[in-house]
View 1 (cartoon, chains in turn purple, yellow):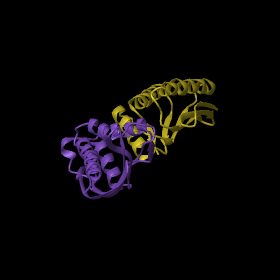
View 2: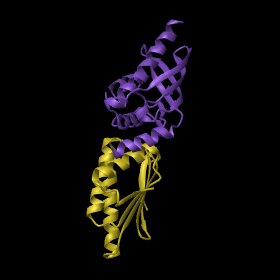
View 3: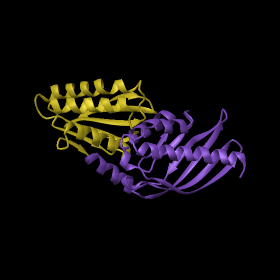
View 4: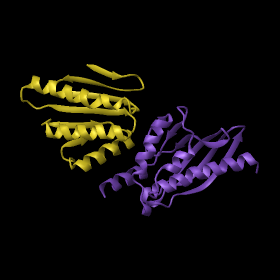
Length: 142
Length: 120
């Protein structure tokens, strides 16, 4: 495996670790660190439409993190593939949400770019997850 | 009809029929949020005065609104509180995307207003 591929894998791992931290009640700072903060970033969560630009994306992570709690963790990356093209890379990921967050298997695509020497996420797309939506509505009622 | 904002973020307010209708869109920046509450409250007040004691309804279309920052959620919370206190006969929040809907449902639960505010 080449150096760039290892770096992208590490950045990808930081992103999914940040999700696990967030859903376990550990806050969103790690998620903030995982992204480049520009107007040219995009995201689509399993329970949302497209967000464009860091400010809009940050609002979604902040709100989502409010459902985080220590007993709600347990997500995992089942498998992933990384493809590097210069300072740009993409990764396909099969992700399983934690049981508290619906436990659904979700296919994701992430694009990362290397800016100022750091690989970070600039695009995240996850397939819709009705189970996650239902789980969050249940959490609201708790 | 009054329009506030631009193609990226905004809302319109229209009065007629039984009440006031608000259409929202985009991601509301911190700078834009303060426009929302006074404009809607003023429209409700004008409409209520014209109705001379008859009921007033408020419908807010959230279909094109992106999830709100804390400041935007606070504006909606204040609006809900004022609307419930000021005798608006019904408040309907319609069409929100999943995350925005969750934001609204949480505010409604926190206010204990599940039977007074409809989310459709």
